Amino acid sequence: MMDNWIALSLLAGLFSNIFNFGNRYVLKSKGDATSYAWLVGTVRLLAFIVIALFIASPLPAISAIYVLAALGLVEVVSAYVFMKMHAASHLSISSLIVRTRLVWVPVIAMIFLKEQLIVREYVGILILFLGLSVTISSHKLRMDKGVKLAYLSGFIIGVLTVLMKAATSVASTAFVMISMSLPTVLIFPMLMKDPKKRLSRVLVKNAGMKLIASFSNIAAMFFYTRALQVGPVSKVTSIYQGALILSVLAGIILLKEREDIIKKLIGSAGVIAGAFLLT
Image (cartoon, rainbow, N blue to C red; front, top):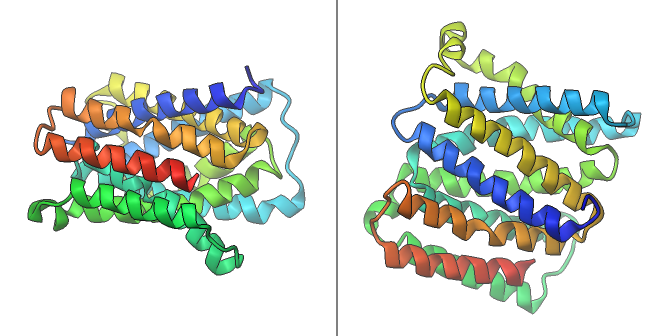
């Protein structure tokens, strides 16, 4: 199964949805987004250190250090914005908007690598944004802080995805994830007021869900990185992103985000269609 990129992509998408649901569940009632992001990064770091020790993981070459360092620093920003987004926005909204990452990857490639978009990709971008426009068509959502954070998160994750793909070609899955997690664990406490108190309380409330979400993130990142190593990035991304409908449904059904259900479902269909055209 470890060479079956379709199965790996499906597993990555499934665990990513569990992770996103857990994030919204623990942060929706004024949860501490920064300390929770630190917890997720710490659990992920420890898990992949164990994996690196017990599974043959060759050390990355010196030339890979720059890519791995850039990956870690971008992840610091990405994790911070991502958790703030979950604290401020409905899961059924943010899980759609953050898929704008699929737009930024080809746009960044067009600007910096001079790659030209094909007609299908332009159509995909248009359909994706039409789907988002339906989803956030109310005035309240257009002005919502969570929506703004979701768009920002989509851009940052787009950059992170490009760096992850570059990193998987120069380092093992374990070292990619260690490099991605370590800066978050070290830097986040420096950004906090009274970090000892905040970090000591991170497991006091919703400890079970926080750990489930953290280990789901480990599984999602492992399977996604492995899928990128053995499969075509466009098709891997297509399957992975297509699973977003589960987050929308989880938000509507389990978190009772019942406002504008029809718009959310229509928007989901548009975003999924645009995602498949883009990838």
